[in-house]
Length: 124
Image (cartoon, rainbow, N blue to C red; front, side, top):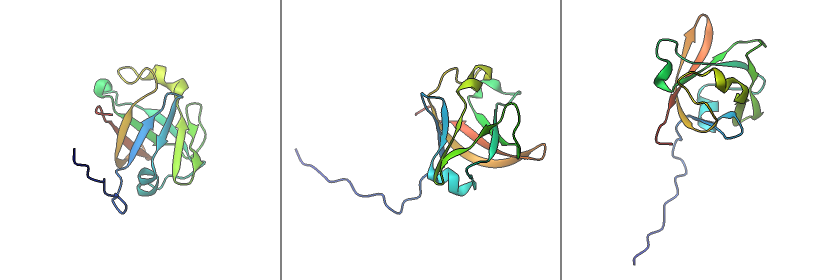
C-alpha cells in the first residue's frame, strides 16, 4: 500500500448550497449567505414552480414582512436557516420529509420580491 496525504482546500471557493435537515431546517452554507446577502431576521416563504411541480426544485421568496406562511431566517451570521418542516406537506412532487441537498443557483425577482432558486442536488 502507498498512502498519499490529502491536500488542504483552503482558499477554494465553496459552492452556495442549502440542505434540508432531518429536523426540518433549510440551512444555507456560508457561501450562500455571503453571495446572496442573507441576514438573520429576514422573512421568507418556501415555494415551488406550479408549471413544473415535480422538478424537485425549491424557491425561497423573501417577503420583507411577516406573513402566515413566512419563516424567519435565523442562526449565525455565516450559517443561516429556515424552519420549514410544517410546510413540507404542501410540496406536491417535492420532498415529503426532511433530507436533501440543493445548489443555490440564482437570485431572481418574482412579483416584486427577491427569490432564490434552489436546484435539487440528487447526488446528495
